[in-house]
Amino acid sequence: MRALRGVLFDIDGTLLDTREEWARAFNAALARAGRPPVSLDAITPWIGFPFDRILSEGFHVPPADVPRIAAAFIEEEMAILAHGVRAFPGVPEMLASLGPWAVAAVSNKASSASREALRLADLLDRFGAVVGGDQVARKKPAPDGVLRAADILRIPVDACAIVGDTENDVLAGKAAGARTIGVTWGYGGRRRLEAAGVAHLVETPAALPPLLRALTPSTGT
Image 1 (cartoon, one colour):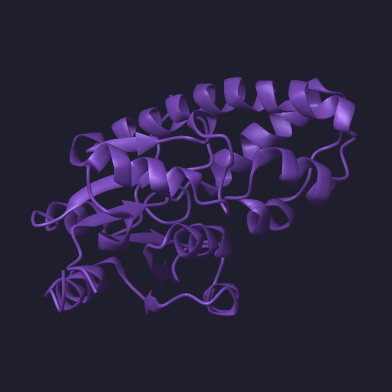
Image 2 (cartoon, one colour):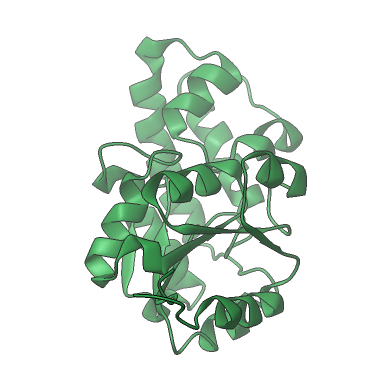
């Protein structure tokens, strides 16, 4: 197994606690289409899924309405992000300690919103690549974003680990051939991560660097 050289992070629910902002943008987009709002508890389990799937499977939006609601969501999310976002406690310190590894972000959200959210949280300069869902043919749980991030970093994907809070991150990582690390402080939860076959779990951001160090010694080429 190759030594670990790259760490690929999900954003929402892993690095940033954006649940309330995400729900506000979602409901604002629904309102623009004349649809009623949904509760925070109803939307939280869907954060991190491809947006068209959230609308069609999660909230039974007719296919004809999906494109305009998706476009409205991007506008609303950017407006809400301008008021600020917050990293989960311990995340900035954890990222600052990842000097030995190349770091990228892989999100299903639009690349513009991904970069802006990281910038507003004062985290953007730590990332060698930010891959949004609009930059790949297929969003997570497909492997496309993971593969693209590894390619941008110029690191073999099997020398990368993806860190995320939902089964979509785990499934994308496994499909790409990356190692998978689940975080239990996000929106997916331990049970969903384990059901997806996650290789490792961490309970706090501070627990991640020691795990990465344990995965880094090379046992092969």
